[in-house]
Length: 247
Image (tube, rainbow, N blue to C red; front, side, top):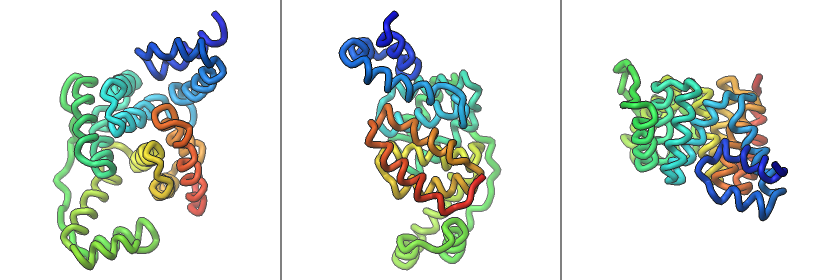
């Protein structure tokens, strides 16, 4: 086995059923080795467990509308003992971040990967909300009420109440722990080249106990699916979040 074959086999642990990998190993063995080294970080336990990184990769593939890889990574997450309730929580986070279609694709693939509906044993909780309470929530989360929140509160208060209810539920009230939800949103936003939102959720992840190594591994999951260009906004977001003390 030559070096190119070894790299192809390792990259294939991340990207199965990719016949183009063999040609890449022949045509650009150095590139194949680079891809394999990134893949090594994603598919093995490190600062984050491999199963959690598979869940992040699944969320990214839902956003990219890659249904084959989406199901593959959810199947991997299942094999790595990521619970169905955590997958259901991730689906809620994906819905608030990227809307209805990625959520629908994610839930449908999760049902196939887990052999049935993925559900949350949720308590009814409170659905009471008002503009003042929403402002208080964002004040606590950000340390100030962002201008875009104030705008919504001033011009469409009921919509702000809805935004607040969805955000509080998604980021802090599902079986996916707050740290991991914030890391998932970092990964998705890195894949969409959104440094500002990587920074927002990196700060949230740090406040929830994430280390910088965990932030790097989470955002690195975007690279095979969004290119090396995804690392620039990922790195910028992580660096910008250093104004929050972490472990």
